[in-house]
Every structure is written in structure tokens, then in C-alpha cells.
Amino acid sequence: MPNQPTDPTPLTHRPRGDWREGVLAGNIGYLIAQANVASTRQFNAHIGEPLALRPVEYSLLMLLRANASLTPGQLARALVLPAPSLTMVIDRLQQRGLVERVRSETDRRSQRVLLTADGATLARDAEQRSPAMHAEMDAALTPGERLLFTELLRKVVEHGRR
Amino acid sequence: MPNQPTDPTPLTHRPRGDWREGVLAGNIGYLIAQANVASTRQFNAHIGEPLALRPVEYSLLMLLRANASLTPGQLARALVLPAPSLTMVIDRLQQRGLVERVRSETDRRSQRVLLTADGATLARDAEQRSPAMHAEMDAALTPGERLLFTELLRKVVEHGRR
DNA sequence: TATTGTTATACTCTATAACTATA
DNA sequence: TATAGTTATAGAGTATAACAATA
Image 1 (cartoon, helix red, strand yellow):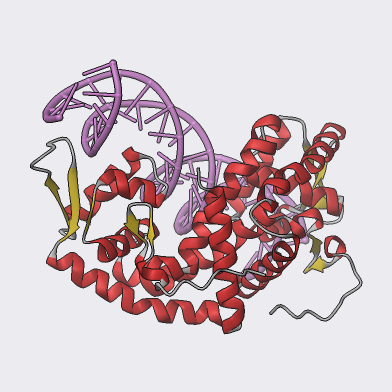
Image 2 (cartoon, rainbow over the protein chains, first blue to last red; image 1 turned 180 degrees about the vertical axis):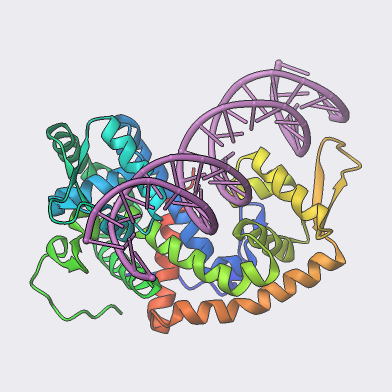
């Protein structure tokens, strides 16, 4: 639980360094964007740079690890990415030999994306690095807070989906 | 408080639509990125499109509303933006007549950025639209959850700063 | 020499529209 | 006509290095 000492100064007037945040202090969108910067930095340090994976590439590998194979359409929806962007992501991963595309026999328009052996190895490696990445985030939160935070994020994401 | 009915299915194996999230379900970075997409959409609907303001431009105006004037250096640090990016943001706002740059008399290298009359009017308008924007986010959270969420985000951001 | 801010440039990310091929 | 996916293209965001002016 967040258990701040009660500071009578309104959040909007509390100085952070040499400036005041004003209404931004309570602005969820602003805070989410800032948190996104921080967590992206942590991702890059622990997974992105060592394995040469971008956040979206990592997410895609994790999805294929959990689902064996998915269509580009499913991946686009899961990652909230427009289809053309997804095509490029898959192209890159395919060029690196991490995923392959297999055309459906029954409907030759559609295809399934799946991990190659190399892709599965890299995905496993990436997954094993997750605890180290989370350890850094966990330094900011107690275990209880972290669980709470995850649930609240899930609610916001779920509600924001359309 | 998040008060989920206890579902014995592990988070990683719960299907969302026609796929499973796997380890991403508990991945804070992934959730933050998704939440960022949702909140950016809400920002654009309520403030960004009606007032032709990008998120960073809105943030900058709110900071100037709270601080009267700031140097580009302070703004860059506050917005976690590299200096050249900030230059371009200020350029745009200046061309629209929303902010102006004033050179310091004592140290002619530095300058102060401040709102013009038009900028102050637009900033006030933008601030008045915030409640409507937050109302949408609030539909996903109870008032208590929202406060909690804000505090947790602040902790993560604070800790991720460097 | 160090600092403030800008210019130039490149690279990534994202979004839209138009297209191909199947159905 | 509708759907799955791709190509082409443009715009926005972000990062780095080199520079000008001032201290």
C-alpha cells in the first residue's frame, strides 16, 4: 500500500527539483507516459540491448511462446498495432531467422506465424531475463504494491481497449 | 481496491479473446505501454484534436501555467526530452504565437520561455478540458483506485528517474 | 574550457491509403 | 464484394553529433 506521510502541500504546488508540476502531478496520462519512459529504459538495459530486441519484438516472441502460432491479424490485435507495422516487425524477425510464416492450406489468404528453433531459444533466453528486469522495478514498489499496480494497469488497459 | 473474484487459472494461461498473453500478463512494462496507448487515445479525443495540441505540447503549456517561466533546460529535464527535441517543440509553439523566448539580461546564453496572452488562454482552455478526459479514465477505476494508481505511478516514475 | 541552446541529420515508430491474392 | 496481408509513403517522435554564442 502506498503509505505517504501526509504532506499538507497540494500536489500541484509541490516543487520537483526547480520546477512545479502543476496539474500534471495528478494527470494520469502524463504519469503513464513518464512511467513508460522509465520501463522502456529498464527493458533496453536488461533485454533489449543484450538480445537486440525491441519492445514490440520481445512482446511478439512472448506471445508466440504462449500460443505456438498466431495469425498476423491476431498479433496485430494483441499488440494494438496496425497491420502494416506488424508486417514489418515480422519481416525483421523472419530475416533474422527467428520466426517463419506458414500459409494456411484451407484458406490460402491467411497464414500462421511461428517460432523457429532459433526463435524459441532466443525467446526462452529473453523470458529468463525478465526477473532481473522486474527486480529493478520492484525496488520502487513493495511486492503488494506491485500486484496492485499490475491489477490497476490491467483495468485501465482493459477499459481503454476498443 | 482491486477486488477480483479469485480465479484459480494462472494469469499467464487466461485467454484474452483468441490468444493467451503468457508472461506478458504480468509484465509491467508491457502493461504500461498498453495503458499508454489507451490514455494517449483519450488525450487526443478530448484535448489533442480539439485544440491541435500534441501530448508534449500540452505538458509544456501546463508546466508554464504552473511556473510562469522556465528555461529550455528546465523544460527538457521536466519533460525527459533531449534538448534538440525541445527546441523543435518550442519552435512550433512560438510559430503559433503561444509562447515566446526571452533572453536573460544577466547571462545572455540562457533564456526563459513564457506563455503569450494567446498561449495563456489556450492553456486555460486545455486545463478546463482535463476533467472530461479524466472522466473516461475514471470509468475504469473507482476514486480510491485512481488515487492509488496515481501514487504508484509516481513512485515508479520517481524511482526510474536518473 | 564549460555551458546554453541550435542546426543538421538519421533512424525508428506509427498511421493511412492503395494494392494483391484469395475467398 | 469482403477479407488477409502487403507495399508505398508520409508524418511524428527521438537520438546523436557538430556547431555558435556566451561565460
